[in-house]
Image (cartoon, rainbow, N blue to C red; front, side, top):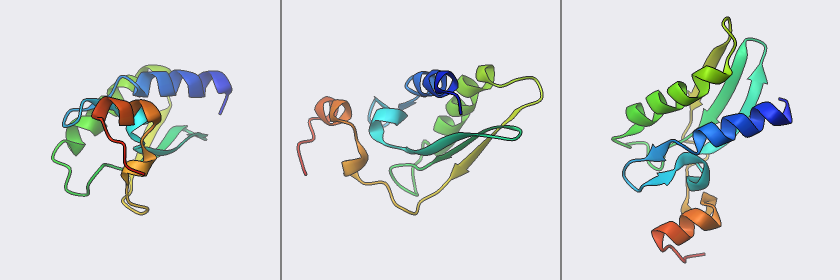
Length: 104
């Protein structure tokens, strides 16, 4: 993946908030990998819980913000995984500060 495309994708994904906590999915640590595939982009991500009630909304927003980065014949493949599970340690320092989380 070109550095420019990766930067654009991450910037776009920073606009997607987990509505339950009000922190973007990049800083929350929900993204596991993002790379170009032969037909477009492949994103592997998780949710804070397998029972996340906002998962569909978050996935819809991810598709909406990444679609403009794709060519006409390209697709976005999102793989939602729960192994490894999300933990608070995946949060960025910014997310920790926003949430007031100081645990190790």
